[in-house]
Image (cartoon, rainbow, N blue to C red; front, side):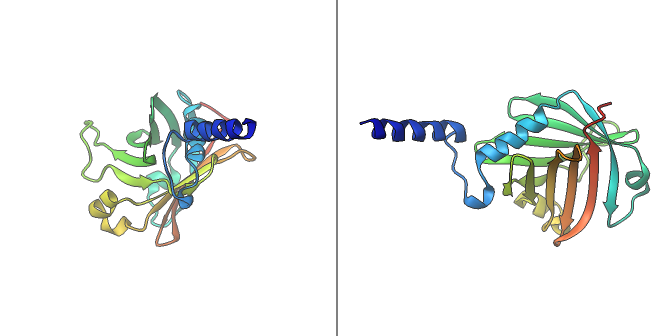
Length: 186
């Protein structure tokens, strides 16, 4: 009887922790995605200086500009992380924790606040840990930007170096990489 109770209790705890969601082994666990999301959400209201480490197609502003990551808004399962380049605040990473998993979208706006014609691209986390998640391009992205159909965005916490890394690969090759200094909130 005790063994049966322990099995039922363990099963119930597992269901509660995963939120009754099912994920393939490739996707890692929902717990990993939850941990990653909440680790980033814990930085709400803080801004961190950054720098571009690599660009395959140099853009002077991004390459030499002052980068700032600002965890601006966390509302339930949706988080807005502003990615500023000098005075340009048109970029926002939007992370959503849903029943399907963790989603990353990139929002781009014109200076007047209107959506850019290239906005809302990204993907769903398919592998990762509580410290890092990778997001291959989703169908919406492939339709919007066919050239980005092989994109994989990876966000990583490096606790030893106290940095947050934003990385983009295309066709399995590095395309863009930036890191933000978590030890020096602004």
